Length: 225
Image 1 (cartoon, rainbow, N blue to C red):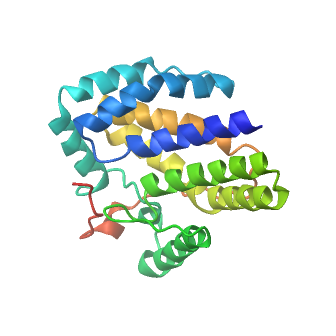
Image 2 (cartoon, rainbow, N blue to C red):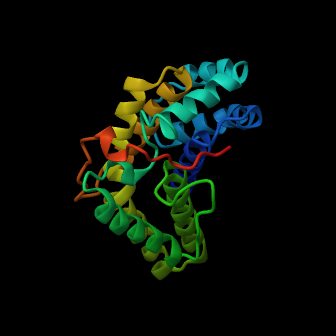
Image 3 (tube, rainbow, N blue to C red):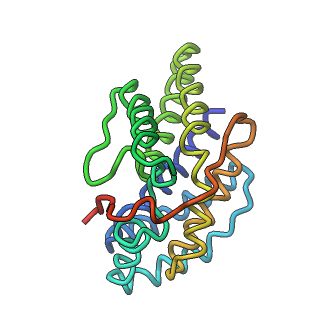
């Protein structure tokens, strides 16, 4: 079990990093990590073709400015595919405040805090947190601490059910529809394939299925410049 948890954590971490504001150094780091990403998918017995994403990274390295423009258009300014969970809350401020408080409650329970420029409900933060929980579970298992292992596992399942698991599908659908860059289209496909597998056995997920851009008019999420 330890090895599978390790590889799952690596995939979450890789995907989180891939949604950072694009810089050439970041793309090079991702490129170097593709071998381990492939190994992780194979260990989990997931048939994932990474060649399109590998090619997209290589292309993006040659036109980083274009990729930065697309990052802004998708996630920050035009908000074609917001990378924040509460962007998909249609009841505006009241519901968003409740969800943000719940997300931050998960982080604080483990002594964590999301720092600028990313928000607690960003895809970057939520993927990073799930990786953290899996690493914690792995540590607890290695220590023979069954109680701590259960705490991390329950937190993972609850967070996936109540947060990450409910909005990644609409997010990746919007990426597929609106992204003009192969990098983000293929990244979205990877994210969806992996999380579809991860949600198996987690009951009670209620998918967010609608995005009304007018709800966010006048709002810009902080970008990572």
